[in-house]
Image (cartoon, rainbow, N blue to C red; front, side, top):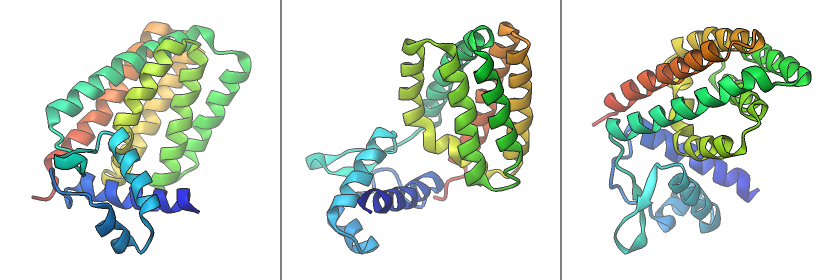
Length: 214
């Protein structure tokens, strides 16, 4: 129950930060948030720690949590790193996916196509698609680096599908092209397509950041 409650609090805080309703430097006070959500401090504390891990909150004066200042340059650097690491993993996966994993890739691709216009369902299918490629690359060092980067960009990437409805269709098209290149064992094309795919996500995220309410 606590984890589910913490998830709900986290979702609300993330939406407030990503849309700009909660401004950089704004205090995130446990007691105030607990009263606002009608819960104890325990799930609030868990949500705040996860928010910090996701790069959306930081410690301010007296170690209290505040909304983190996020600049376009910060996100550009993060997404550039994601693009380089994930494209390397995808290129490796083109030659290393087992037959079972190749079928799994097609399965998660189909899941993404069956989501319709549901951004939450597509975000889940999207995560499975990228996870299948990551695991199929069989490189633990690169996978660990991507996990760390994903933790810091996760909510911004998910915002793609909520804030820009056209992103679902373009993402599906990009996934299909990436899957085709992987199944053809064309590592270099896979690398280029994955890097371009991440860059497309960043363009949407940068637009979201620039439009946040003052």
